Image (spheres, rainbow, N blue to C red):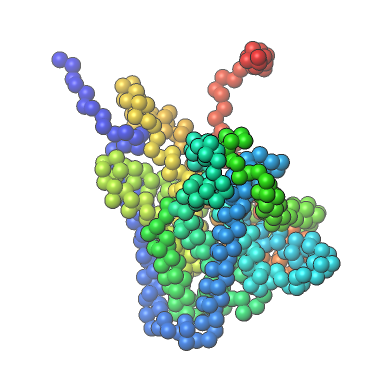
Length: 565
């Protein structure tokens, strides 16, 4: 009698690997939670003798806290408030010249290193920038408006408005086309469309999106360091850096780090209690069908208002990016004389690759373990495992780095040990972004495909190689690109633990900007931007699926001609 095979119940290629996904997820969860808890414990131990009342009793600390809250709140209100009409204008105008370029520039803001953006802003809005003659002619703004509170808010809006508008546009474009068709048939006015269709799409997004933007502005470091303009514009992040780097006051640094953590954690807990999670990775949303019935509010006065909003967005985004390219081309002759540029670029790439691979490994382990638990009907355990990787969002990089420094201080040396700590912190900080990109690809095959694979006996490594890997390689490459570019542009952690004699590209760019070496800074900024674009292009090329047996050119031409009407 033939032996009866045991039915296979798993619904995912990960499940055929027995308990390996669960074990890997548990190891990754322990590492993430242990790192956060260890750094937080070190901060609490160091700050046990300090009293939180010093934050409002000490005049300088109170001023720093007030300014940090004020600039982050103002930046968030402006970025989110201006992003709403921009997203609505982009949704109403699915076709106009330059729309694709504008969307690509908006998506670039997620991974654009902050120092590159600062270089472009200085080139356009600085005292000798592109807008200086216009400002002198109009006389509407002071010469130093780029420095101080106004400059910090301008840089934060430049960074966060495109990201917020792109995510809002993605939410608007996910609305079913039948809703817009029905709205067109009913002849809904602009106000009715806002209440019935647009606001219900944006409302669940706003709480967590506002929390994300506020956290990015609250923990901003390079922007405040470059455009702060003096002690009056100091923030908690800059004060923490000064306490660690120059004053060697570890207790004060611990108090400032704990203050940052408490404020960010409280805000995220409020945001998590309401609203849907905005995806941190911008995807290709399905475009809406066009037609006169589709958007009745796209006629009349809205043509003028939409044109004004889109022109303002282009004027905010495109000139700084163009300034980086123009100044970088002008600084190319200085590249051979930059003896520290090549080692800095190599050092940055090696550290970015290490941080990217670390973030990718943690993301895959956590998501595969969470999926394994979800298939076994353990929703709470799956949510806890997946949420563990998102906890890093509420811990600023300097907070995490400060805690690890205090925890490893007796054994932490200099040189490569400090750079290893930077790689570790960058890997954990890039983890939420990598998880957002990989999450959709982890479930793998559909149920019919699973049954067909089981019937043919495709299990274990064969299933992982031939069925799961083709679906995973593109998301994994995108996640690695995001993690590497975030590490390439990091300046806060490298400024704390790096060595000025062996800088990375962001540190070298900051040194050149601080020393007014404009041509060298232009070449460095252009090289850093080229590395960011090159990482995405290279990983996209390596993971692109080519045909195993391509058609000859003559056959391809015959097939193309046969398809023509």
